[in-house]
View 1 (cartoon, rainbow, N blue to C red):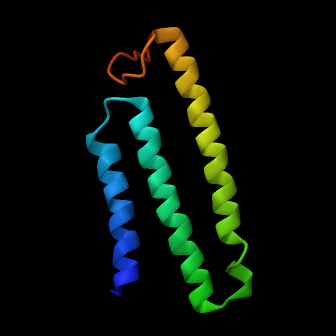
View 2 (cartoon, rainbow, N blue to C red):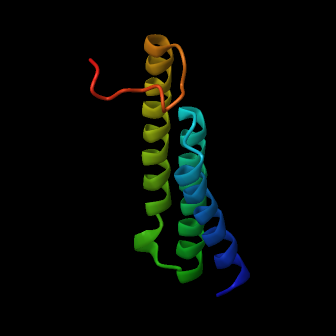
View 3 (cartoon, one colour):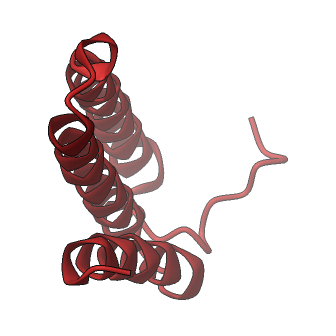
Length: 98
């Protein structure tokens, strides 16, 4: 494994570990998801550049578009949660309530 692959793999795994273990605030979970998407974007871009395949060149931009949609939806949920519950603590959210 090259050092570049190790760096992006470890960045993705750190984001995944942060998402799995630090689930106190919704904002920290969203930041971990954004870190994972950023490492995937950079790794996919480098892979497309290294292979030189023209068919895979638009795939990093598509991933970036989905990442932007995911971020906007996450921030909308964060604002809605903060308005209704007064906090973004994930433990205070009860999914059985209306």
